[in-house]
Image: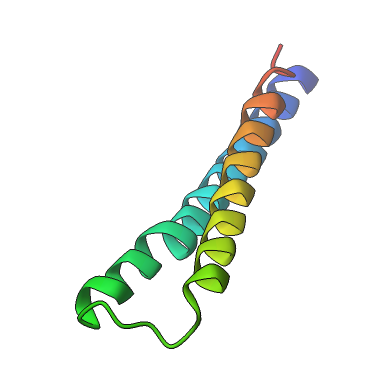
Length: 76
C-alpha cells in the first residue's frame, strides 16, 4: 500500500511541475509574441532585453518539464 501512495504523490508532483512549466512557456513565449503582434510591432523595452527575458522563461519552463519527467522515473 505504501508504494501506491508514493506513486500518487510522485504523479501529483510531476503534474504540478509540468503545469508550472506550461505557465513559464506561456509567459516567456506566447505573451511576448502576442505583445508584438497586438502592439503593431512596437515594444516598450529594447529588443535585446526582451529576447533574453523570453529565452530565460522558455529555458526555465523546459527545465521544469524535464524535472517532472525525472520525478516520474521514481514510480514503482
